[in-house]
Length: 404
Image 1: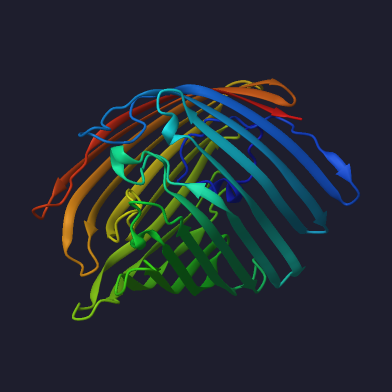
Image 2: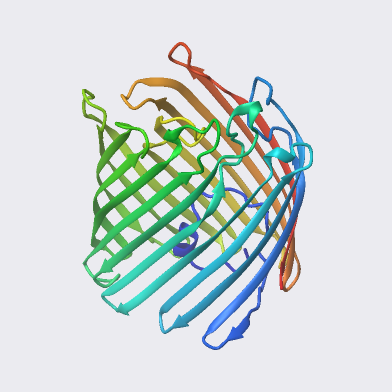
């Protein structure tokens, strides 16, 4: 990333790992009246030594050459301080040694930032498309196809009060639903939905530093499984700061309470947090740290109706060595319990992931990237009959991106 100059923009990227496709230095655009169109294409080839992410059984350590083909077109418009963007994208993933696992994702995403005036603003984002759970299978070795689902996701945040005022507030809401295709061996419990909403109130007690209070409700639900859902209520307090031109961040700490949809399950509460920090010692180098402790849906296997409770942390470093060459390094660690709908722990899981990429802007509209990612997942069962599946996985990718 060249010429990073705003930490507030960088904070939006906190928690994300290394990407296998480098961004071009200057994508350019095609003018269509008030709308700018940016078409892009990318090709990546590499090797995955555990494409099904299994540590034992018939699918363990299956390796293959991987080929990714991406095509996208971004439509952008701006009016004053307000911006509008929608992107149509498709991505084909092919495994030369396991063609049954091939899949194609496609969808449309969008971002809207509307500045009504200095005291009122609205941010909207959405994602509609057909996607797949990469690394999972519909029915083990009997059906190696990746589970396919339709995603309907949208979010909005309305801000009231000037960002420089002593008091301001944000109202927010998000909706995310995944409907899985009904195929042989696919459990009804695959369909899932998350709805959350709440408010954050900021009080500026120092220049560039706000105290905050946040209250939010989140509903986690497996829509085809009766009684398989939780309502999570969070009460958090903390700080939001941009202390210097080099440092910004947020820190929230409080209590999260979980109410189960299943009968005869007691309410549970525990301490949770959300922290994100960006540090830019020089304008060509960026460090980011994020950590959170929360509840979530079980994403490792779409054919279960389990939930997670745990901590996820990540750190990344982006450095621009020259005007053309940059590197990205990231590390993440997840420590969580997998629980059933009654809150009974099924297994413990620890995941270590490390990623590294080198990006080279060959020309104004073309870039190449060489990346490596390693994952090490360790699981231990707490109940008899529970499948504890630990594995290791290494992925190498060489990719090229061109703005057409």
